[in-house]
Image (cartoon, rainbow, N blue to C red; front, side, top):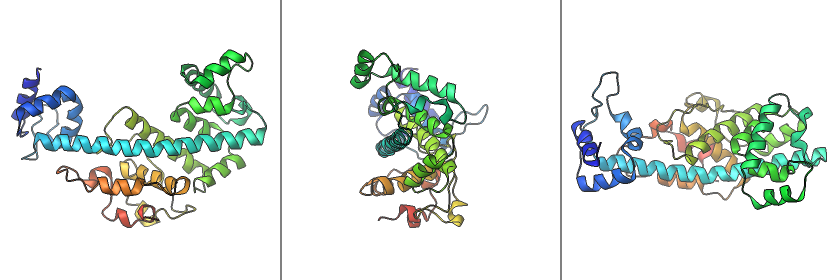
Amino acid sequence: MTLAEQVSRLKQRGLVFDDESEATAYLFNISYYRLRAYTYPFQENGEGSEHNFIRKNIHFKDIIDLYCFDRRLRSLIFNAIEKIEVAVRTKIVQVYAESTGDSHWFSDENLYRFGYDDLMEHIDADVNRSNEDFIKHYCSKYNSPSMPPSWMALEVVSFATLSRLFQSLKLDSRKEFITEQFGLKKVAILENWLHSISNLRNCCAHHSRVWNRRFMVSVTLPYNTLYPFMDRTAIGQIHTNKLFAVLSCIAYILDIISPDSNFKKNIKELLKSDCRLLGLKDMGFPEYWQSLPVWRER
């Protein structure tokens, strides 16, 4: 369809346009298909439906406002996850390099309980894909070992690979120690959180919608954390496959590793947006969310 035909199609389905030329300009910068992710919840979508808007008086500007809100939200989340990713890398490398006395400890199969071969393939691929000068320098200077030391190699692997590495390591005092550094008592909880946060990070990195999304990886929410988080009653009412659950995990970790972070303040400010279509329930926020210990300002 031409841009004019795209506007016409949306008008036929009940979307209101205040300025069609402005809408055409938006559609030339943000594809019709990308915006579909933001119109979809407000349309009929059953088999054979015309995809008409169920809710009346929705303007094209409302959809753009929702799109822009989601973009700003992704930016806040991505910046927060960067701090967590760096902290996870640092702690894993430091603890295992120091305890083993081995610069290349990550290639020792005896440290893992499963997934060794697959993990090594991912690490190898991530390192070979890297354009970092320190990786090039190592490869040009040393022939053996072929892989750079852990503080270089694990610096360039993806968060997904890092999460997989932590999960694959045998359960021992080192994993328990690292888990405690993030305010958690059970290693399995941190493994789940890293998996969930990594999944959210990928959504942000690929500019995918996080508003009104049901995530593939559900979050496990513990009630016996080392620092204030949520009580058992609140946890039972949280949708663990929606955004609020994983945002709470991010907020909890940031309070520990970056106590001066403005993440919670910035999230609260963004949620005051005058976006007409924004509903906190769409992202799994309970009505009382700001009163939960993890979301109180320290």
